[in-house]
Image (cartoon, rainbow, N blue to C red; front, side, top):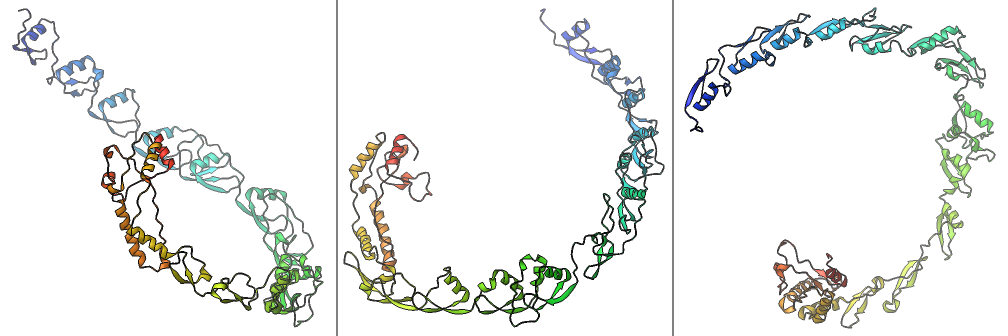
Length: 590
Protein backbone atom coordinates (compact mmCIF):
# COMPACT_ATOMS: atom_id res chain seq x y z
CA UNK A 1 0.00 0.00 0.00
CA UNK A 2 2.87 2.33 0.58
CA UNK A 3 3.59 2.54 -3.20
CA UNK A 4 -0.03 3.28 -3.98
CA UNK A 5 -0.66 6.84 -5.26
CA UNK A 6 -4.15 8.19 -5.08
CA UNK A 7 -5.23 9.32 -8.61
CA UNK A 8 -8.22 11.40 -7.47
CA UNK A 9 -8.00 15.03 -8.65
CA UNK A 10 -8.05 17.59 -5.90
CA UNK A 11 -8.24 21.41 -6.06
CA UNK A 12 -5.40 23.43 -4.49
CA UNK A 13 -5.82 27.12 -3.55
CA UNK A 14 -2.71 29.16 -4.44
CA UNK A 15 -1.50 32.23 -2.50
CA UNK A 16 -2.97 34.45 -5.18
CA UNK A 17 -6.41 32.95 -4.43
CA UNK A 18 -6.52 31.09 -7.77
CA UNK A 19 -7.09 27.31 -7.69
CA UNK A 20 -5.35 24.59 -9.63
CA UNK A 21 -6.25 20.89 -10.07
CA UNK A 22 -3.66 18.29 -9.13
CA UNK A 23 -3.73 14.51 -8.41
CA UNK A 24 -4.35 13.72 -4.73
CA UNK A 25 -0.85 12.32 -4.09
CA UNK A 26 0.81 15.51 -5.56
CA UNK A 27 -1.56 17.80 -3.60
CA UNK A 28 -0.54 16.02 -0.36
CA UNK A 29 3.19 16.48 -1.11
CA UNK A 30 2.61 20.22 -1.83
CA UNK A 31 0.64 20.69 1.40
CA UNK A 32 3.40 18.88 3.37
CA UNK A 33 5.96 21.27 1.87
CA UNK A 34 7.84 18.54 0.09
CA UNK A 35 7.03 20.00 -3.36
CA UNK A 36 7.02 23.65 -4.40
CA UNK A 37 3.77 25.47 -4.91
CA UNK A 38 2.96 25.45 -8.70
CA UNK A 39 3.18 28.73 -10.66
CA UNK A 40 -0.06 30.45 -11.51
CA UNK A 41 -0.31 31.39 -15.19
CA UNK A 42 -3.68 33.07 -14.83
CA UNK A 43 -4.12 36.85 -15.10
CA UNK A 44 -3.26 38.57 -11.89
CA UNK A 45 -6.06 40.70 -10.42
CA UNK A 46 -3.36 43.20 -9.41
CA UNK A 47 -1.35 44.73 -12.32
CA UNK A 48 2.39 45.32 -12.11
CA UNK A 49 3.21 49.02 -11.47
CA UNK A 50 6.56 50.49 -12.56
CA UNK A 51 8.16 52.41 -9.76
CA UNK A 52 9.99 54.90 -12.04
CA UNK A 53 7.11 56.11 -14.20
CA UNK A 54 3.95 54.83 -12.46
CA UNK A 55 2.63 53.01 -15.53
CA UNK A 56 0.97 49.64 -14.94
CA UNK A 57 1.24 46.45 -16.92
CA UNK A 58 -1.22 43.51 -17.07
CA UNK A 59 0.65 40.33 -16.12
CA UNK A 60 0.07 36.78 -14.88
CA UNK A 61 0.43 35.89 -11.22
CA UNK A 62 3.77 34.15 -11.91
CA UNK A 63 5.09 37.23 -13.82
CA UNK A 64 3.95 39.55 -11.01
CA UNK A 65 6.02 37.59 -8.50
CA UNK A 66 9.02 37.55 -10.86
CA UNK A 67 8.89 41.30 -11.68
CA UNK A 68 8.47 42.27 -8.04
CA UNK A 69 11.52 40.24 -7.16
CA UNK A 70 13.68 41.75 -9.99
CA UNK A 71 12.24 44.95 -11.60
CA UNK A 72 15.25 45.26 -13.98
CA UNK A 73 14.07 42.41 -16.18
CA UNK A 74 10.92 44.19 -17.36
CA UNK A 75 10.68 47.42 -19.39
CA UNK A 76 7.77 49.82 -19.73
CA UNK A 77 6.57 49.76 -23.34
CA UNK A 78 4.08 52.61 -22.98
CA UNK A 79 4.47 55.50 -25.46
CA UNK A 80 5.47 58.80 -23.91
CA UNK A 81 6.51 62.28 -25.11
CA UNK A 82 10.14 63.32 -24.66
CA UNK A 83 11.18 66.98 -25.01
CA UNK A 84 14.98 67.39 -25.51
CA UNK A 85 16.82 70.67 -24.84
CA UNK A 86 16.26 71.80 -28.45
CA UNK A 87 12.50 71.82 -27.79
CA UNK A 88 11.46 69.30 -30.47
CA UNK A 89 8.94 66.76 -29.15
CA UNK A 90 9.62 63.11 -29.84
CA UNK A 91 7.43 60.05 -29.14
CA UNK A 92 9.52 57.38 -27.38
CA UNK A 93 8.96 54.22 -25.41
CA UNK A 94 8.78 54.97 -21.71
CA UNK A 95 11.83 52.87 -20.85
CA UNK A 96 13.94 54.75 -23.47
CA UNK A 97 12.82 58.12 -22.13
CA UNK A 98 13.72 57.03 -18.58
CA UNK A 99 17.22 55.90 -19.62
CA UNK A 100 17.82 59.19 -21.47
CA UNK A 101 16.69 61.23 -18.45
CA UNK A 102 18.94 59.17 -16.20
CA UNK A 103 21.88 59.91 -18.58
CA UNK A 104 22.26 56.22 -19.26
CA UNK A 105 21.52 56.67 -22.98
CA UNK A 106 22.35 59.54 -25.36
CA UNK A 107 19.76 61.16 -27.61
CA UNK A 108 20.34 62.83 -30.99
CA UNK A 109 17.49 64.84 -32.38
CA UNK A 110 17.13 64.04 -36.10
CA UNK A 111 14.82 66.93 -36.86
CA UNK A 112 16.30 69.26 -39.51
CA UNK A 113 16.69 72.99 -39.16
CA UNK A 114 18.29 75.81 -41.12
CA UNK A 115 21.53 77.14 -39.65
CA UNK A 116 24.11 79.68 -40.74
CA UNK A 117 27.60 78.16 -40.86
CA UNK A 118 29.91 80.30 -38.69
CA UNK A 119 33.00 79.93 -40.88
CA UNK A 120 31.74 80.75 -44.42
CA UNK A 121 28.31 82.28 -43.65
CA UNK A 122 26.36 79.97 -45.98
CA UNK A 123 23.04 78.57 -44.79
CA UNK A 124 22.68 74.80 -44.54
CA UNK A 125 19.85 72.48 -43.49
CA UNK A 126 21.28 70.03 -40.93
CA UNK A 127 20.05 67.75 -38.16
CA UNK A 128 19.35 69.34 -34.81
CA UNK A 129 22.17 67.41 -33.14
CA UNK A 130 24.63 68.56 -35.83
CA UNK A 131 23.46 72.17 -35.37
CA UNK A 132 24.39 71.98 -31.69
CA UNK A 133 27.90 70.83 -32.62
CA UNK A 134 28.24 73.61 -35.25
CA UNK A 135 27.34 76.25 -32.65
CA UNK A 136 30.32 75.12 -30.56
CA UNK A 137 32.79 75.74 -33.47
CA UNK A 138 35.80 77.99 -32.73
CA UNK A 139 37.70 79.79 -35.51
CA UNK A 140 37.88 82.83 -37.82
CA UNK A 141 34.75 83.70 -39.81
CA UNK A 142 34.76 85.20 -43.32
CA UNK A 143 34.34 88.96 -43.51
CA UNK A 144 32.00 88.50 -46.50
CA UNK A 145 29.63 85.57 -46.93
CA UNK A 146 31.17 83.03 -49.32
CA UNK A 147 34.42 85.01 -49.87
CA UNK A 148 37.65 83.31 -48.72
CA UNK A 149 40.80 85.49 -48.63
CA UNK A 150 44.21 84.11 -49.55
CA UNK A 151 46.65 83.70 -46.66
CA UNK A 152 44.06 83.71 -43.84
CA UNK A 153 43.92 80.67 -41.52
CA UNK A 154 40.24 80.13 -40.68
CA UNK A 155 40.63 77.10 -38.44
CA UNK A 156 39.09 73.65 -38.58
CA UNK A 157 36.06 72.85 -40.71
CA UNK A 158 32.72 73.48 -39.02
CA UNK A 159 30.63 71.53 -41.58
CA UNK A 160 31.38 70.12 -45.10
CA UNK A 161 29.78 72.93 -47.12
CA UNK A 162 29.32 72.25 -50.88
CA UNK A 163 28.14 75.73 -51.83
CA UNK A 164 30.25 77.78 -54.23
CA UNK A 165 32.71 80.19 -52.62
CA UNK A 166 34.98 82.82 -54.14
CA UNK A 167 38.68 82.40 -53.28
CA UNK A 168 40.07 85.95 -53.45
CA UNK A 169 43.78 86.24 -54.15
CA UNK A 170 45.98 89.01 -52.83
CA UNK A 171 46.20 90.39 -56.38
CA UNK A 172 42.41 90.72 -56.48
CA UNK A 173 41.60 87.85 -58.84
CA UNK A 174 39.02 85.38 -57.66
CA UNK A 175 38.48 81.66 -58.19
CA UNK A 176 35.05 80.04 -57.87
CA UNK A 177 35.45 76.76 -55.98
CA UNK A 178 33.43 74.50 -53.66
CA UNK A 179 33.45 76.12 -50.21
CA UNK A 180 35.48 73.47 -48.38
CA UNK A 181 38.04 73.35 -51.24
CA UNK A 182 38.44 77.13 -51.13
CA UNK A 183 39.29 77.01 -47.41
CA UNK A 184 41.74 74.13 -48.00
CA UNK A 185 43.64 76.14 -50.66
CA UNK A 186 43.56 79.52 -48.93
CA UNK A 187 47.01 79.01 -47.37
CA UNK A 188 48.69 77.02 -50.19
CA UNK A 189 47.80 78.70 -53.49
CA UNK A 190 50.01 78.58 -56.57
CA UNK A 191 51.05 81.72 -58.42
CA UNK A 192 48.16 83.51 -60.12
CA UNK A 193 47.91 82.68 -63.82
CA UNK A 194 45.01 84.94 -64.76
CA UNK A 195 45.81 86.78 -68.05
CA UNK A 196 46.64 90.46 -67.56
CA UNK A 197 47.25 92.99 -70.34
CA UNK A 198 50.63 94.75 -70.19
CA UNK A 199 53.13 96.45 -72.52
CA UNK A 200 55.49 93.91 -74.15
CA UNK A 201 59.02 94.62 -72.85
CA UNK A 202 60.62 94.05 -76.27
CA UNK A 203 58.41 95.83 -78.80
CA UNK A 204 56.05 98.05 -76.81
CA UNK A 205 52.90 96.36 -78.13
CA UNK A 206 50.14 95.25 -75.82
CA UNK A 207 50.08 91.58 -74.81
CA UNK A 208 48.55 89.32 -72.16
CA UNK A 209 50.67 87.45 -69.63
CA UNK A 210 50.06 85.59 -66.36
CA UNK A 211 49.28 87.84 -63.40
CA UNK A 212 52.41 86.85 -61.40
CA UNK A 213 54.65 87.60 -64.43
CA UNK A 214 52.93 90.97 -64.95
CA UNK A 215 53.83 91.98 -61.40
CA UNK A 216 57.46 91.03 -62.03
CA UNK A 217 57.60 93.00 -65.32
CA UNK A 218 56.02 96.07 -63.71
CA UNK A 219 58.69 95.96 -61.05
CA UNK A 220 61.39 96.17 -63.78
CA UNK A 221 59.90 99.47 -65.04
CA UNK A 222 60.72 98.65 -68.72
CA UNK A 223 59.18 101.02 -71.32
CA UNK A 224 60.49 100.18 -74.82
CA UNK A 225 59.54 102.21 -77.93
CA UNK A 226 56.68 100.81 -80.01
CA UNK A 227 57.98 98.96 -83.10
CA UNK A 228 55.88 99.79 -86.20
CA UNK A 229 58.39 99.43 -89.09
CA UNK A 230 61.55 97.41 -89.57
CA UNK A 231 64.02 96.99 -92.44
CA UNK A 232 65.22 93.46 -93.18
CA UNK A 233 68.63 92.94 -91.62
CA UNK A 234 68.08 95.24 -88.65
CA UNK A 235 67.93 93.30 -85.38
CA UNK A 236 65.67 94.87 -82.73
CA UNK A 237 66.49 94.61 -79.03
CA UNK A 238 64.89 91.55 -77.47
CA UNK A 239 64.30 90.80 -73.79
CA UNK A 240 63.56 87.25 -72.74
CA UNK A 241 61.48 86.29 -69.73
CA UNK A 242 60.14 82.86 -68.87
CA UNK A 243 56.48 82.69 -69.85
CA UNK A 244 56.58 85.78 -72.09
CA UNK A 245 54.25 85.20 -75.11
CA UNK A 246 55.04 85.88 -78.75
CA UNK A 247 53.74 89.20 -80.02
CA UNK A 248 51.37 88.74 -82.97
CA UNK A 249 50.94 92.45 -83.69
CA UNK A 250 51.45 93.15 -87.44
CA UNK A 251 54.50 95.26 -88.26
CA UNK A 252 55.55 96.78 -91.59
CA UNK A 253 58.55 94.80 -92.84
CA UNK A 254 60.71 96.21 -95.64
CA UNK A 255 62.52 93.48 -97.60
CA UNK A 256 65.97 93.88 -99.13
CA UNK A 257 64.34 93.38 -102.51
CA UNK A 258 62.29 96.51 -101.89
CA UNK A 259 58.97 94.76 -101.32
CA UNK A 260 56.94 95.71 -98.27
CA UNK A 261 54.67 93.34 -96.35
CA UNK A 262 52.99 92.92 -92.98
CA UNK A 263 54.51 90.31 -90.65
CA UNK A 264 53.82 89.32 -87.03
CA UNK A 265 56.10 91.20 -84.65
CA UNK A 266 57.61 87.94 -83.33
CA UNK A 267 58.90 87.01 -86.85
CA UNK A 268 60.50 90.25 -87.97
CA UNK A 269 63.92 89.53 -86.42
CA UNK A 270 64.20 86.12 -88.13
CA UNK A 271 61.55 85.72 -90.84
CA UNK A 272 60.54 82.09 -91.37
CA UNK A 273 60.15 82.58 -95.12
CA UNK A 274 61.38 84.79 -97.88
CA UNK A 275 59.46 87.39 -99.85
CA UNK A 276 56.39 85.77 -101.40
CA UNK A 277 55.36 88.61 -103.68
CA UNK A 278 55.03 87.01 -107.15
CA UNK A 279 56.42 88.13 -110.48
CA UNK A 280 55.77 86.73 -113.96
CA UNK A 281 59.00 85.31 -115.50
CA UNK A 282 60.00 82.87 -118.25
CA UNK A 283 60.37 79.27 -117.11
CA UNK A 284 63.95 77.99 -117.58
CA UNK A 285 62.45 74.66 -118.66
CA UNK A 286 59.78 75.44 -121.25
CA UNK A 287 59.97 79.23 -121.74
CA UNK A 288 56.34 79.75 -120.73
CA UNK A 289 55.34 82.50 -118.33
CA UNK A 290 55.04 81.31 -114.73
CA UNK A 291 54.35 83.15 -111.47
CA UNK A 292 57.45 83.01 -109.28
CA UNK A 293 57.76 84.31 -105.68
CA UNK A 294 60.52 86.78 -105.06
CA UNK A 295 62.52 84.46 -102.77
CA UNK A 296 62.46 81.73 -105.48
CA UNK A 297 63.79 84.26 -108.00
CA UNK A 298 66.69 84.94 -105.63
CA UNK A 299 67.36 81.22 -105.30
CA UNK A 300 67.40 80.76 -109.11
CA UNK A 301 69.82 83.64 -109.43
CA UNK A 302 72.14 82.20 -106.81
CA UNK A 303 72.03 78.82 -108.58
CA UNK A 304 72.78 80.64 -111.89
CA UNK A 305 69.72 79.10 -113.57
CA UNK A 306 69.38 80.73 -116.99
CA UNK A 307 66.00 81.41 -118.58
CA UNK A 308 65.46 81.29 -122.41
CA UNK A 309 65.01 84.77 -123.93
CA UNK A 310 62.04 83.90 -126.18
CA UNK A 311 59.50 81.10 -126.65
CA UNK A 312 61.15 78.55 -129.04
CA UNK A 313 59.25 75.95 -131.11
CA UNK A 314 60.90 73.28 -129.00
CA UNK A 315 61.71 73.28 -125.29
CA UNK A 316 65.50 73.50 -125.18
CA UNK A 317 66.96 73.02 -121.71
CA UNK A 318 70.32 74.65 -121.11
CA UNK A 319 72.74 71.89 -120.11
CA UNK A 320 74.65 74.33 -117.87
CA UNK A 321 71.63 74.66 -115.57
CA UNK A 322 72.04 72.55 -112.43
CA UNK A 323 68.60 71.94 -110.96
CA UNK A 324 69.78 69.40 -108.35
CA UNK A 325 70.70 72.13 -105.83
CA UNK A 326 67.24 73.73 -105.85
CA UNK A 327 64.95 73.50 -102.85
CA UNK A 328 61.62 71.69 -102.96
CA UNK A 329 59.77 75.04 -103.10
CA UNK A 330 61.77 76.08 -106.18
CA UNK A 331 61.17 72.74 -107.88
CA UNK A 332 57.42 73.03 -107.27
CA UNK A 333 57.39 76.50 -108.88
CA UNK A 334 59.27 75.22 -111.98
CA UNK A 335 56.78 72.32 -112.26
CA UNK A 336 53.74 74.60 -111.93
CA UNK A 337 53.39 75.25 -115.69
CA UNK A 338 50.18 73.58 -116.86
CA UNK A 339 50.96 73.76 -120.62
CA UNK A 340 52.60 71.23 -122.93
CA UNK A 341 55.85 71.53 -124.87
CA UNK A 342 57.49 69.72 -127.75
CA UNK A 343 60.90 68.26 -126.96
CA UNK A 344 63.56 66.40 -128.93
CA UNK A 345 64.33 63.19 -127.06
CA UNK A 346 67.76 61.59 -126.77
CA UNK A 347 66.66 59.07 -129.39
CA UNK A 348 66.12 61.95 -131.87
CA UNK A 349 62.31 61.74 -131.99
CA UNK A 350 59.99 64.64 -131.28
CA UNK A 351 57.46 64.29 -128.48
CA UNK A 352 54.88 66.49 -126.82
CA UNK A 353 55.00 66.28 -123.01
CA UNK A 354 53.59 68.19 -120.07
CA UNK A 355 55.83 71.05 -118.95
CA UNK A 356 55.60 69.79 -115.38
CA UNK A 357 57.60 66.68 -116.42
CA UNK A 358 60.46 68.56 -118.09
CA UNK A 359 62.41 68.89 -114.84
CA UNK A 360 62.50 65.13 -114.38
CA UNK A 361 63.36 64.77 -118.06
CA UNK A 362 66.39 67.03 -117.68
CA UNK A 363 67.64 65.04 -114.65
CA UNK A 364 66.74 61.40 -115.34
CA UNK A 365 65.80 61.32 -119.00
CA UNK A 366 62.48 59.74 -118.03
CA UNK A 367 60.64 61.21 -121.00
CA UNK A 368 63.09 59.69 -123.46
CA UNK A 369 62.60 56.27 -121.92
CA UNK A 370 58.90 56.54 -122.72
CA UNK A 371 59.13 57.28 -126.46
CA UNK A 372 56.28 55.53 -128.30
CA UNK A 373 57.40 56.28 -131.87
CA UNK A 374 57.36 53.16 -134.08
CA UNK A 375 60.64 51.92 -135.59
CA UNK A 376 61.36 48.91 -137.82
CA UNK A 377 63.52 46.16 -136.34
CA UNK A 378 64.99 43.08 -138.06
CA UNK A 379 64.61 39.89 -136.00
CA UNK A 380 67.05 36.93 -136.04
CA UNK A 381 64.57 35.03 -138.20
CA UNK A 382 64.96 37.67 -140.92
CA UNK A 383 61.48 39.19 -140.58
CA UNK A 384 60.91 42.90 -139.88
CA UNK A 385 58.45 44.08 -137.21
CA UNK A 386 57.32 47.46 -135.87
CA UNK A 387 58.37 48.24 -132.26
CA UNK A 388 58.04 51.35 -130.10
CA UNK A 389 61.26 53.28 -129.63
CA UNK A 390 61.43 52.45 -125.93
CA UNK A 391 61.00 48.68 -126.65
CA UNK A 392 63.64 48.92 -129.33
CA UNK A 393 66.11 50.36 -126.82
CA UNK A 394 65.27 47.61 -124.35
CA UNK A 395 65.78 45.02 -127.12
CA UNK A 396 69.23 46.44 -127.91
CA UNK A 397 70.13 46.30 -124.20
CA UNK A 398 69.01 42.67 -123.95
CA UNK A 399 66.15 43.49 -121.59
CA UNK A 400 63.35 42.57 -123.99
CA UNK A 401 62.98 39.87 -126.67
CA UNK A 402 60.29 40.61 -129.28
CA UNK A 403 58.25 37.77 -130.76
CA UNK A 404 57.84 37.36 -134.50
CA UNK A 405 54.16 37.05 -135.38
CA UNK A 406 54.66 35.94 -139.00
CA UNK A 407 53.16 32.50 -139.86
CA UNK A 408 55.02 29.35 -140.95
CA UNK A 409 53.94 25.76 -141.71
CA UNK A 410 55.46 22.76 -139.89
CA UNK A 411 54.56 19.05 -139.73
CA UNK A 412 52.34 17.67 -136.97
CA UNK A 413 54.18 15.57 -134.38
CA UNK A 414 52.01 12.62 -135.44
CA UNK A 415 52.62 13.23 -139.14
CA UNK A 416 53.35 9.54 -139.89
CA UNK A 417 49.73 8.66 -139.01
CA UNK A 418 47.76 11.86 -139.77
CA UNK A 419 49.93 13.28 -142.66
CA UNK A 420 48.86 16.86 -141.63
CA UNK A 421 50.72 20.15 -141.27
CA UNK A 422 50.07 23.02 -138.84
CA UNK A 423 50.42 26.78 -139.31
CA UNK A 424 52.23 28.42 -136.34
CA UNK A 425 53.99 31.68 -135.51
CA UNK A 426 57.53 32.17 -136.74
CA UNK A 427 59.02 32.09 -133.24
CA UNK A 428 57.32 28.81 -132.28
CA UNK A 429 59.88 26.04 -131.54
CA UNK A 430 57.76 23.33 -129.89
CA UNK A 431 55.86 20.28 -131.20
CA UNK A 432 52.75 21.23 -133.15
CA UNK A 433 49.52 19.21 -133.03
CA UNK A 434 46.81 19.17 -135.71
CA UNK A 435 43.08 18.69 -135.15
CA UNK A 436 42.61 15.77 -137.59
CA UNK A 437 41.02 12.49 -136.37
CA UNK A 438 42.67 9.11 -136.90
CA UNK A 439 41.63 5.51 -136.28
CA UNK A 440 42.73 4.04 -132.96
CA UNK A 441 42.58 0.25 -132.36
CA UNK A 442 42.66 -1.10 -128.79
CA UNK A 443 45.39 -3.63 -127.77
CA UNK A 444 42.92 -6.56 -128.05
CA UNK A 445 42.22 -5.59 -131.70
CA UNK A 446 38.50 -5.91 -130.97
CA UNK A 447 37.54 -2.21 -130.80
CA UNK A 448 38.45 0.81 -132.88
CA UNK A 449 37.50 4.49 -132.63
CA UNK A 450 37.98 7.77 -134.53
CA UNK A 451 39.98 10.01 -132.17
CA UNK A 452 41.95 13.28 -132.24
CA UNK A 453 45.14 11.59 -131.06
CA UNK A 454 47.35 14.47 -132.21
CA UNK A 455 45.87 16.89 -129.65
CA UNK A 456 44.74 14.52 -126.86
CA UNK A 457 47.33 11.73 -127.10
CA UNK A 458 47.04 7.91 -127.03
CA UNK A 459 44.36 6.40 -124.72
CA UNK A 460 45.66 4.24 -121.85
CA UNK A 461 42.52 2.09 -121.52
CA UNK A 462 39.84 0.91 -123.94
CA UNK A 463 36.28 1.81 -122.85
CA UNK A 464 34.86 -1.10 -124.87
CA UNK A 465 37.07 -3.64 -123.08
CA UNK A 466 36.18 -2.08 -119.72
CA UNK A 467 32.45 -2.38 -120.45
CA UNK A 468 32.90 -6.01 -121.49
CA UNK A 469 34.61 -6.75 -118.15
CA UNK A 470 31.59 -5.24 -116.37
CA UNK A 471 29.17 -7.37 -118.43
CA UNK A 472 31.28 -10.48 -117.74
CA UNK A 473 31.20 -9.83 -113.98
CA UNK A 474 27.39 -9.56 -114.15
CA UNK A 475 26.93 -12.79 -116.11
CA UNK A 476 29.51 -14.90 -114.22
CA UNK A 477 30.62 -13.41 -110.85
CA UNK A 478 34.05 -14.45 -109.54
CA UNK A 479 34.28 -17.21 -106.95
CA UNK A 480 36.04 -16.70 -103.61
CA UNK A 481 39.46 -18.32 -103.68
CA UNK A 482 41.85 -19.10 -100.88
CA UNK A 483 39.22 -19.23 -98.11
CA UNK A 484 40.91 -22.06 -96.18
CA UNK A 485 44.42 -20.60 -96.41
CA UNK A 486 43.14 -17.15 -95.33
CA UNK A 487 41.24 -18.64 -92.40
CA UNK A 488 44.25 -20.60 -91.13
CA UNK A 489 46.49 -17.50 -91.48
CA UNK A 490 44.04 -15.43 -89.45
CA UNK A 491 43.70 -18.16 -86.77
CA UNK A 492 47.50 -18.27 -86.44
CA UNK A 493 47.64 -14.49 -85.99
CA UNK A 494 44.98 -14.34 -83.27
CA UNK A 495 45.02 -17.78 -81.56
CA UNK A 496 43.05 -16.53 -78.54
CA UNK A 497 40.03 -15.67 -80.73
CA UNK A 498 37.65 -18.04 -82.48
CA UNK A 499 37.66 -17.36 -86.23
CA UNK A 500 34.53 -18.24 -88.20
CA UNK A 501 34.46 -17.88 -92.00
CA UNK A 502 30.94 -17.21 -93.25
CA UNK A 503 30.80 -19.11 -96.53
CA UNK A 504 29.45 -17.71 -99.75
CA UNK A 505 26.46 -20.02 -99.74
CA UNK A 506 25.20 -18.72 -96.39
CA UNK A 507 25.15 -15.04 -97.27
CA UNK A 508 23.82 -12.98 -100.11
CA UNK A 509 27.04 -11.12 -100.86
CA UNK A 510 27.30 -12.36 -104.45
CA UNK A 511 23.65 -11.61 -105.15
CA UNK A 512 24.00 -8.06 -103.88
CA UNK A 513 27.21 -7.64 -105.87
CA UNK A 514 25.53 -8.76 -109.11
CA UNK A 515 22.56 -6.46 -108.49
CA UNK A 516 24.89 -3.49 -108.00
CA UNK A 517 26.90 -4.31 -111.13
CA UNK A 518 23.71 -4.59 -113.19
CA UNK A 519 22.75 -1.08 -112.06
CA UNK A 520 26.15 0.23 -113.21
CA UNK A 521 25.84 -1.68 -116.51
CA UNK A 522 22.47 -0.11 -117.29
CA UNK A 523 23.70 3.40 -116.39
CA UNK A 524 26.97 3.14 -118.36
CA UNK A 525 25.23 1.83 -121.49
CA UNK A 526 23.49 5.22 -121.89
CA UNK A 527 26.79 7.16 -121.90
CA UNK A 528 29.22 7.86 -124.73
CA UNK A 529 32.00 5.22 -124.58
CA UNK A 530 34.66 7.86 -123.85
CA UNK A 531 32.57 9.38 -121.04
CA UNK A 532 32.14 6.08 -119.17
CA UNK A 533 34.12 5.41 -115.95
CA UNK A 534 36.57 2.51 -116.32
CA UNK A 535 35.55 -0.66 -114.51
CA UNK A 536 38.05 -2.46 -112.27
CA UNK A 537 36.88 -5.14 -109.83
CA UNK A 538 38.80 -6.14 -106.69
CA UNK A 539 37.82 -7.37 -103.20
CA UNK A 540 39.24 -6.24 -99.84
CA UNK A 541 39.07 -8.83 -97.02
CA UNK A 542 37.40 -7.43 -93.88
CA UNK A 543 36.43 -8.75 -90.49
CA UNK A 544 34.12 -7.89 -87.60
CA UNK A 545 34.46 -8.79 -83.93
CA UNK A 546 31.19 -10.31 -82.69
CA UNK A 547 29.73 -9.44 -79.31
CA UNK A 548 28.75 -12.08 -76.78
CA UNK A 549 25.06 -12.04 -77.72
CA UNK A 550 25.65 -13.04 -81.38
CA UNK A 551 28.65 -15.40 -81.11
CA UNK A 552 26.57 -18.10 -82.82
CA UNK A 553 26.11 -15.96 -85.99
CA UNK A 554 26.06 -18.24 -89.05
CA UNK A 555 25.05 -15.70 -91.69
CA UNK A 556 25.98 -12.12 -92.63
CA UNK A 557 22.72 -10.65 -91.32
CA UNK A 558 22.75 -6.82 -90.84
CA UNK A 559 19.70 -6.98 -88.56
CA UNK A 560 21.67 -9.12 -86.09
CA UNK A 561 24.95 -7.24 -86.42
CA UNK A 562 23.39 -3.78 -86.01
CA UNK A 563 20.79 -4.06 -83.25
CA UNK A 564 21.48 -0.86 -81.31
CA UNK A 565 22.01 1.43 -84.29
CA UNK A 566 19.22 0.74 -86.77
CA UNK A 567 19.61 4.21 -88.31
CA UNK A 568 23.15 3.40 -89.57
CA UNK A 569 23.73 2.88 -93.27
CA UNK A 570 25.65 -0.36 -93.67
CA UNK A 571 27.85 -2.19 -91.17
CA UNK A 572 31.15 -0.98 -89.74
CA UNK A 573 33.89 -3.42 -90.80
CA UNK A 574 37.66 -3.51 -90.20
CA UNK A 575 40.13 -4.07 -93.06
CA UNK A 576 42.02 -7.34 -92.70
CA UNK A 577 45.68 -6.27 -92.29
CA UNK A 578 48.60 -7.53 -90.21
CA UNK A 579 48.54 -4.32 -88.15
CA UNK A 580 44.84 -4.69 -87.29
CA UNK A 581 45.31 -8.38 -86.40
CA UNK A 582 48.27 -7.42 -84.16
CA UNK A 583 46.12 -4.89 -82.33
CA UNK A 584 43.35 -7.49 -81.98
CA UNK A 585 45.83 -10.03 -80.58
CA UNK A 586 47.24 -7.48 -78.06
CA UNK A 587 43.79 -6.28 -77.00
CA UNK A 588 44.36 -2.77 -78.37
CA UNK A 589 41.28 -0.88 -79.52
CA UNK A 590 41.12 -0.72 -83.32
